[in-house]
Amino acid sequence: MSENTVRIGLIGAGGIAGAHVEGYLRNPDTITFAAVADPVRESAEKRAEAAGAAVYADYLTMLAEADIDAVDICLPHHLHKDAIVAAARAGKHILCEKPLCLTPEEAAEVSAAVEEAGVTLMCAHNQLFLPAVARAKELIEGGTIGRVYEVRTTDSFFNDFDPSSMGWRAHAATSGGGELIDTGYHPTYLLLHLAGGAPVEVTAMLATHRLAFMEGEDSATVLVRFDNGVIGTVVTSWAYEAAPGTEKFSAVGELGSLSSDGTTLTVTKRGDADATVIELEPVHQFGEELNHFARSILDGTRPLHTQKEGIEVLGIILGAYESARTRAVAAVPALSATH
Image 1 (cartoon, one colour):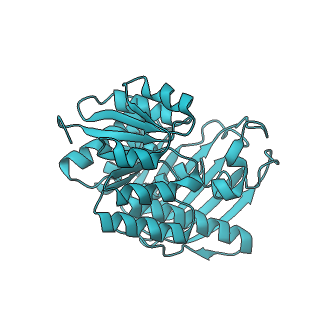
Image 2 (image 1 turned 90 degrees about the vertical axis):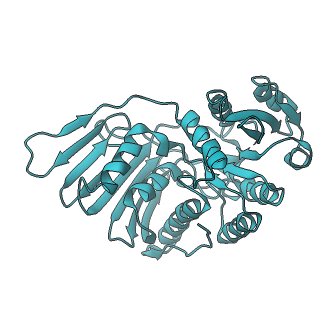
Image 3 (image 1 turned 120 degrees about the vertical axis):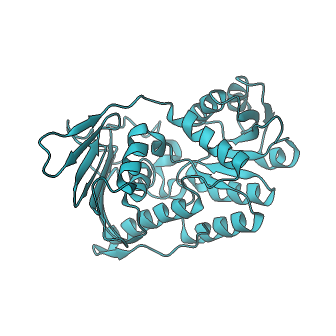
């Protein structure tokens, strides 16, 4: 690392990469955007121009030739595992968009590669950097609502995908499933974060309400039991917007509750006449996420979510798919993960 910044090589220059590049540019003191790899040269050049980053046609060449310390993987889901393993073997630290990978076999391979290389892997779980989430986690861990009983998370919106625009997301082989393993990954990692335990069993109902051209579901409702006794609920959809007033997340415990629309945080203590509403300043989630990744590398600290949490989230989702298939409660598979 030169000049106390982390030199990042971007792998994949598609849609989400734009938000990541904006995150780099918001953190000039910790990040240098050094290179980008994408087989579509026009896409790579579009991302690179913001910082004069070097352009490569493929990431293997970038890993071999570019002056970088870390990679940021923004590829379609089915390509994550190979890129993670290649980057780890090249000794590069890794930020990877969700989902971390798609199968138990891939999870084992990712975990082994990262552990053997001794590199830092951070999952790009951007919603953890919402101020309301950070404050809620602080209050929960500080005992404000006592022992937590229940956590709920919601992430639903009206998605205007059609067969001509959906691309690789329409196919289970490239997406890993349907909406649950895509947008549904966000409320699932948020549930894991706030529940504070390890997921042990899951029950799910999946539906295709509107996007019938997809191979996978467009909506999911998932129940998760954690080893600390917390019961969690995830509701997520591309078919509809949640009803007005639906919380983004909430937690109920022995002493009260907290809930949030994603911007403000409302804390209600049992016995108090009035709730406390905490107003929070908005942030650029990707800017905060990228700074956290860079600081983790520069300071040698553990990121909020490493491959351990990424694999636990995958376990919940794979268990949910098994539950929906068998119409029974499913165990969360014990996938291989290092800490």
